[in-house]
Length: 219
Ligand SMILES: Nc1ncnc2c1ncn2[C@@H]1O[C@H](COP(=O)(O)OP(=O)(O)OP(=O)(O)O)[C@@H](O)[C@H]1O
Ligand SMILES: O=P(O)(O)OC[C@H]1O[C@H](OP(=O)(O)OP(=O)(O)O)[C@H](O)[C@@H]1O
Image (cartoon, rainbow, N blue to C red; front, top):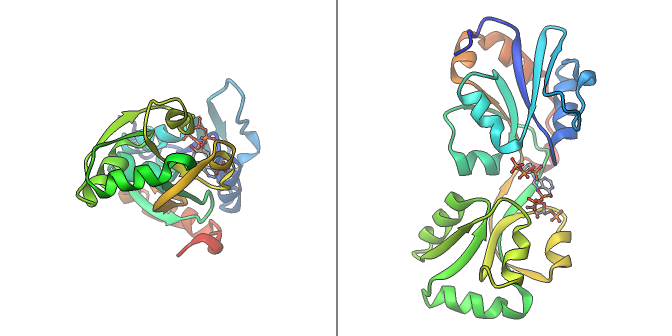
């Protein structure tokens, strides 16, 4: 485990929230100009800080274990993984919705199957979230865990429906899927390692204080 008294290390997610994460970190005065999303270089020492670029789902892992002091990650990932980290701030960026969806032509059938407590097959990248959603309704589901392109699964008979994220709605539309239910909404969060938060509180709190929230999406 690394000591928490060195240079602050920040985990930055590549992908959908990369640019917004850079904007937030830049607003806090961090020198993000060195970062390149698609470089093969993954560790970026900069002035007074060090950045790591990783997959979004891995950000909380680096932060929980103290390999990074702080990081930026979607609320959806936190709800799914339940990492032991401090959630410092809702940045308001990276808005998206977790939805239940099915092929439009079979949407009514899937709705009825769920209503009659039949076991439906659900493809998702978020198995815990999907299971909790069905259990919350007193329903059972067979969860098929996938890693991407979830919308494909019900089109080829791998699943009846999906639990996945939507933002613009383009992917649902392009694949003729209908939203059956809105499960939750997600925005990007600033998270901190518990030890870093305790031992470097002034530094971490000051940094969070300088970050600008995108108020439009904060409820
Ligand atoms: N279409 C979208 N528009 C805006 N934000 C999104 C969208 N899809 C996902 N997000 C948000 O951005 C985060 C990163 O999504 P992205 O699609 O880049 O990574 P991922 O492929 O889910 O992650 P991993 O590679 O670790 O599996 C998500 O956790 C979510 O909070
Ligand atoms: O509503 P939209 O704006 O179309 O965005 C929704 C898509 O974005 C995410 O996919 P991502 O880009 O992460 O690719 P993936 O399918 O490989 O996970 C999500 O899983 C949807 O597929």
